[in-house]
Amino acid sequence: MKRIVTTLSLLLILQLVQAQDAQTIAQKLVDKVRSCKTISHSSSQKWGNIGDANDFTPFSGSCLFKMVPLDSNIRAYYSLKANDINDIYNGKTITRVNAADSTINVTDLQKYPGERSNITSKMLYTQSILDIYNMLSPIKGKRDYKMRMIADTTINNMPCNRLRLTYTDTLINKQRTQYYKEISINVQTHLPAHVKSFSQSEYGIQIIESNLSGFKINDTAINQILTTDVNEVPGYRKIEYSPTLKRENAIDLKKGQKAPEWKLPVVQGDSLSLSQLKGKVVVLEFSGVYCGYCLVAVKEMNKLQDSVDSSKVRLVSVYSDEVKDKLKKYVERYGMKFTVVYNEKDQKNKKILRDYGVSGIPHFFVIDQEGNIAWHSVGFQTNIGEVLIREIKKLLK
Image 1 (cartoon, rainbow, N blue to C red):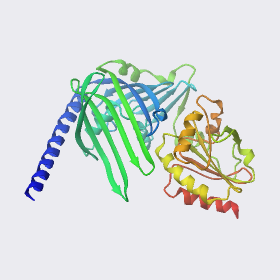
Image 2: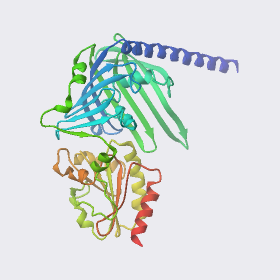
Image 3: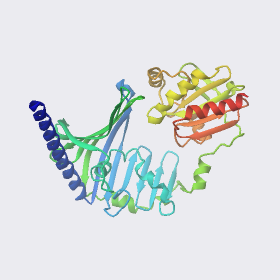
Image 4: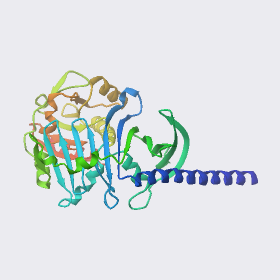
């Protein structure tokens, strides 16, 4: 008994020491960022569902931050640039300059404070130096994770300490639910070199990894971007956000309105069009391989497929920016029983996304036997299967 007590005591002491060491390392990073007027870096990300390495999609860009301690949102202003998109936050507005369609979208946060959540919704913000800084030193002062040190590592021949931030780790009915982040911090610079987010549930495992490099401290480039009037870029169309405009841009298809026609390649076959499905109730779902809630929806769509009469009801899921071979592996891995169509990257028939006003996924539509919109909803609901069954039954009476 004494031996057991001694062992437990040693484990508790070890955990305490690890927590203290982790706090010391985290504080050095926080102090480093806090001492900067500006800080910028390159970010190279990849994300996907665990399995074949080819399932992971790369994404890269540049992150520039001007530290503003009094900013109540993220304590900084930023410019995040990847490919054709440049997102700029200056404390008063969020501006997106899109070179692909020559538009400048401006959201006035003073007029629409409810849109502040969009400040941190940008892909490049996730796992950036500022995101990490605000994780380790929360604005509201309360951490929602447990932090400890794990084995050191080497990145680009530089020694790094590693911190693990565990948000959830439970075991219920033999099913583990786990969500944590690992941050590798350069021992010499006290800046992050690599970040990994790990999420495990009954629906699978998803990972986001980011490599941070090319740090520049107190560079003035961000100041020039923030003071440039991007609203006056020649040849660009300015769009000012308003709730009304958002609804108009979403092309909020009304009940009874004719569903836009489409024709797309099918993962499990040749091609399919909406007109081919006339006479059937169609459940049309817009989805994505790297959307967590979309993966949850796969399970519900499979259940729905098993419960409907396929001669009267057709379930179709639309995936965008996908390569057929890669999407086929995804379909097989998760045992999708319904029809999956797709838009390949740079394919012009992405028109379906605009026609249906898809601004978020998953987005569900129920189309009646005559090809008219019967119901639609954006976002995942835990009872989406029940809701869809109810809407289908209304049309089969």
